Length: 370
Image (cartoon, rainbow, N blue to C red):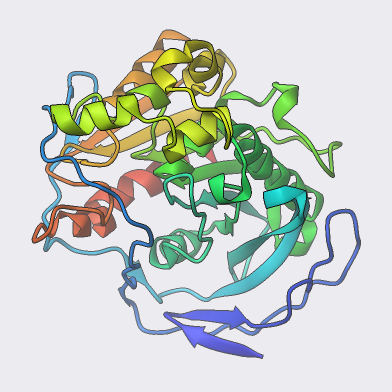
């Protein structure tokens, strides 16, 4: 059975329509429909964040500054046929208390042509949640440009997980999709990752750890987890400096914390240490540590009025990548906040779904994925 949503045919079959990793199972082919082109649906932000009261001016000397209008033309959905297949299990891993946890993904793809380049989407959620249903409009827009777009769950602090687990989950999904490339119409040699916020951080880690064995675990180890391109929207890098650009109260709150999600995602659920006092662990969790020639090309985006993740986080990574010979570009979105997370009464969250911003994403992907 399929239902229609903004030009999508949504396959509502039971979980396990594609078997667990390693199994050879038939993949049902849902029917597809087309709706008139229209603005892509907005996605509500799930999760609560304390916003800083002020943010220092962004260092844009090595960035391109974008000035999208809040009311500017929005990205479009519905002009092309796409299908959405939900709740495919890609791995079974230890969750909270060591209990088995099935990780699932949603596959959004054009109905014609192929094989297509793959974009693996990593949702945000502050290292606490990873809702694969988020940003449907953005994913639909990308699929209509000719990509197989796969949104995944990954482990967070609710699973008593650390960044090592989150990166391993993203890589397990990439290997699973390469192993089942024919079933999903994927070109396995053309793979990118696109992450927002915490997902942007994990996307960056995936992009620079193609040869780091500790992050590859689980099934399909005969498949590569390397990617060709990384799109990072307002993701952190040096997790001890998340609040470096913020007002003194917010900065002190972050720096003095021993139980924040960032602390737990670096050090584990039971370590009562501040990140400021664990420089080796912070460095091991920083994508800049692993960057080098041959890594994926990067494009980084950050709002200059981001009150959740300091804009300097992507500046630090951008400069580190460039210094290590990694192709990189950074876009500063003038006056934009942390995606839809903005101060009350501020409509700048709408900037992220404008054609002016999204065309830089699609242009980068066209350039990197042939």
